[in-house]
Image 1 (tube, rainbow, N blue to C red):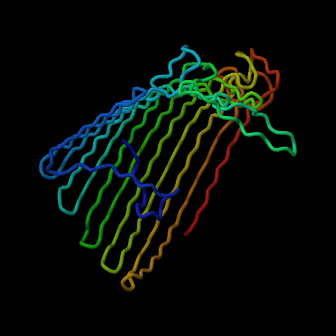
Image 2: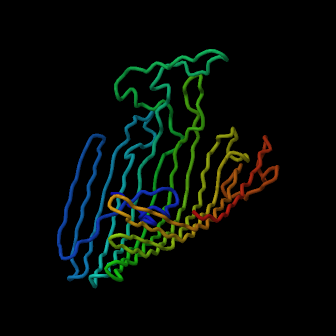
Length: 364
């Protein structure tokens, strides 16, 4: 089951980064129906979907959908200290309401919620799949291609290093969306599409920080990733459609925010208690876009059309981020060389700040 925010400017002109239109099924008026399917595969893969459509009188209907998706890991861990199964364990649901009080007015409201769990687990090393050499060739000489190793699935999928901590994924996503269409006349239609979405990412895992090319072995560190994301999208559009002329005009607003904390533990050679043991990249971003657009297509003769359009856009983007070297997560950011109280700082590592913003206006 795919959950997607409504796509702004469904005709494409006002999209901010290309157009991918994913539209979920609407409730059906006057119909009581349902469906269910379930599948099972190797690696204890289970996929199931259930849908129920319920009429609410003659002018409204409700549609509920639920999806479950689970699978174990394809990999065999180096030891049994930490769990790698299930690799994914996801549960999602969507509730949709369709109201059509008149032939001209249609209102669709949707809400969805997803729980995304599992164990991201380790990765297979390069040396597990190939024999050396992995080192860079000497200057002026051609390198040698690594030789693929032979063996069955289990041998080639066995991880050659131990995880540094229990990997875990506990992510949540939810959103609400509204779609209103009103036919002002046989040729003129007003439309509104709006949505608000939230995504919370909470993961911990053993991350790869480098590759020892001489051996094909990975350098690894425990890592955590916490992120909060919010997205607000609103569009109002007026469309005219006759046999020879098609016109549309409207306004669009988009705002996206993120708050991210990505931390690596012990990756810089420091020990617990030393400043630099926690190496991280906290950052906040804001992206806003306001636009007004218009487009028209005129059929000159059969097989020949002329299309023209204009769009005014105001974009504002900002990012405040840091590279931090801390002994504790609670240590304040300090953008000067020195030590935190009670810790040592053998490399004189210091936090660094990145504060940038850009704003521009454009007519296309």
